[in-house]
Image 1 (tube, rainbow, N blue to C red):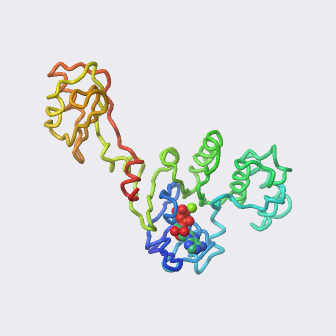
Image 2 (cartoon, helix red, strand yellow):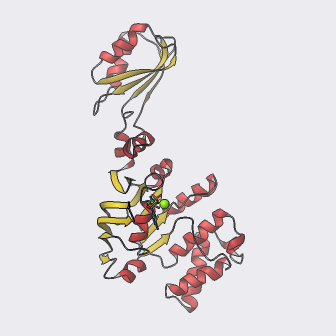
Image 3 (cartoon, rainbow, N blue to C red):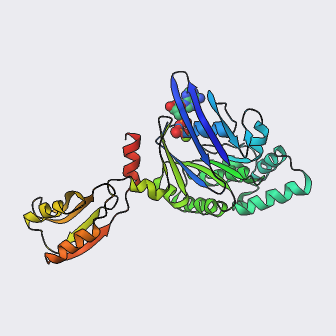
Amino acid sequence: MIEIRELSKIYGNIRAVDNISFRVEKGEVLGFLGPNGAGKSTTMKIVTCYIPPTSGTVEVGGKDIFTDPVGVREQIGYLPESAPSYPEMTVTEFLSFIAEVRGYTGAERTRRIDQITELTSLRDVQIQIIDTLSKGYRQRVCFAQALIHDPPVLILDEPTDGLDPNQKHEMREVIRRMSKEKTIILSTHILEEMEAVCGRAIIISRGRIVADGTPRQLAAMSKYHNAVTLKLRSAAKPALMKDLEKLKGVAEVAPLAGKKDAPTAFQIFAQKGKVILQEVTSFLEKKKISVEEVYLEHGRVDEVFREVTGG
Ligand SMILES: Nc1ncnc2c1ncn2[C@@H]1O[C@H](COP(=O)(O)OP(=O)(O)O)[C@@H](O)[C@H]1O
Ligand SMILES: [Mg+2]
């Protein structure tokens, strides 16, 4: 549905986007992750035909941003960063204006505005001036604007930025509901958000792709992948850490709580690709060590994020 090929954008001596290529298939929700200044917004502005790239190209639904920019825009709903709109208009005036720009008139225009007002829960504020709305409502107005033509593709630039926890939750629910029939790229630096709504994520850093995979695959890149956390009923004998370290597949044992040479809790890291849970638990049983808690980690995306973005 979206194909990005060797895309670059250079501002003076800044390579905001540095030769990135990827595809997004129909029905996919792709999280676009990266620290501030990584090039997320710039990439989205190019895909939506807001700015041209320095080199490379983008196709959306088979239409090229250079040869058929209108064809591209028709297929996209775009929620830009910090949700711009016309603050002096009322919500309905603004949506009406956008509907007109999108080519709807008469009863069809009214029907669409009505439907979107309902979908984005804007009914209570529809006659209010946008400038007087809270940030959460302004964000929703701009989201409504992006949906008015029922586009197959949504490009959402930090859609939950500045929202309170309830509003964030609500926005994620709406995105999740839409993901069934739409192709979505959303940028965020909130990792739980990516894990909550995205089937796949790309991490970019300094304009380059540094990781690409499902949330689970990204977590598996972490040194915490398959690590075992162990809490004992009483302090360990000093030799225990050394014994654990010798077990097959164990990379490292780190104390988590208690005295350094006699801890009450450990983190046991696995060697890359190794599963150590069974090994650890049977060792403890054999030694009759009484355990209070055992916990197996899938990995930590935040640690992977820091690792690949040089944070
Ligand atoms: N219009 C512009 N002129 C000059 N530099 C820009 C412009 N827009 C963005 N940049 C720079 O490009 C880089 C990427 O920015 P941006 O795409 O906004 O990152 P992100 O959205 O990931 O935070 C940053 O270093 C930013 O300062
Ligand atoms: Mg941005």
